Length: 54
Image (cartoon, rainbow, N blue to C red; front, side, top):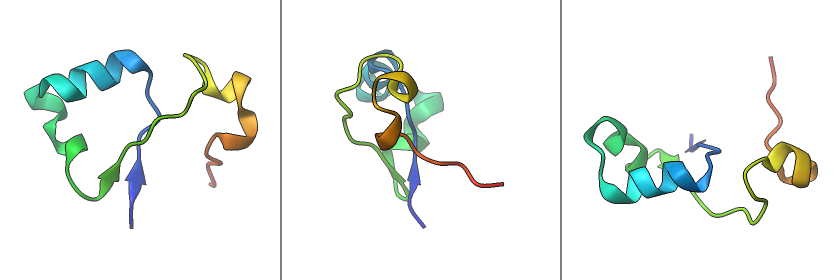
């Protein structure tokens, strides 16, 4: 099962820099892809935001 992290550009900078504590997020099953939504995707593009089920 894929896992997805929703994070701002600041987090992407940390992932790209290879911060050791976040290195696992650059490996399977984690995926990341850009969303052109700005810092608050749940407000600027709610239909593209993931739905969490309980």
